[in-house]
Picture 1 (cartoon, rainbow, N blue to C red):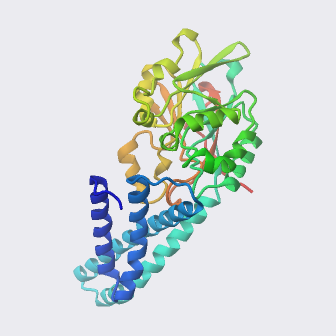
Picture 2: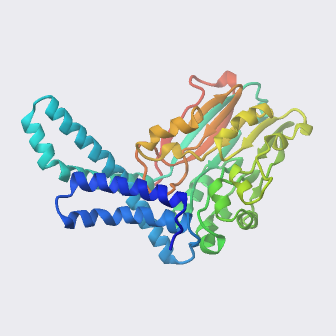
Picture 3: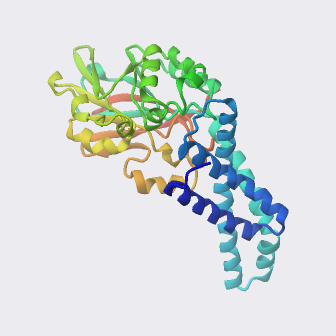
Length: 393
């Protein structure tokens, strides 16, 4: 039985209030009210039992329950939005004195809302699972040394291997990344949602990632929730270099690049004192170099700029993933929400995510595998980032 924590009480109030609103506006019979109660119960169950409780995800049944709950979350998102829209149209019909419009949305509108929410969910799932899309990005670096011109970096972020993302999707990502023939592959966190014992088979294709130089990895918050030290060891076993407030130095034609990587702020909850240290990852003792920081959370950009980095690669935001969160995310993560932005003289690139978390839904954003190419600023076109997409086969 879940404990009556503040989290449980708040969640219960929110889910219960939304159920009362939706069922009151759409259900005209006990049977329909019961049907609507089931998805709301599923949305309540997973956070309370797994996030706020003590149960771990260890059996396939747990994965199925998570997947069902996440699908319900996606559907209810659209159901609530369309119910609000219907009520707005009913108010408009009364204000405009439009009896035909009022009659339609009062009598037929509930079925339009139910059908529309299902169609929106189906479309969102299709948009999510037909990805990721290849996004080509050129980043203009002031004073870039000629030897570094055309350096290519593949970024994988927020893959979220777990209840809804499995081995088949990961294989597709690896095939796309290897086809890009990049100098480096970087994984900027939130790669997994679950322990290695359960997900090892699904992440195994990542061991086949190929790059001319190295494959680098930094932790995201979900990697920390899933057991950071276990995953650090596992990814090292797959041949990746894991950067924990550390750096690697690469030489190319006499030019030096420092790739720094910081831990995610979430690690401190499990390992007190482990906080992001861009100042350490910048390797000031390495002397003049192009400095690129891998940091899952784009909010680290302020400290990264102060530490002297030229470019930060991040994820975390999913670009909001689906409407209306594609708008709400700007309030939390602006100005570094998705794509290319500036933090003073430093560039920040935020991936919209290679997979999905929670509801396997994309609506208003798309999953991406990013190929970043460094160019000298004199060769940059306006705008400085040129994004081209192509679908995977």
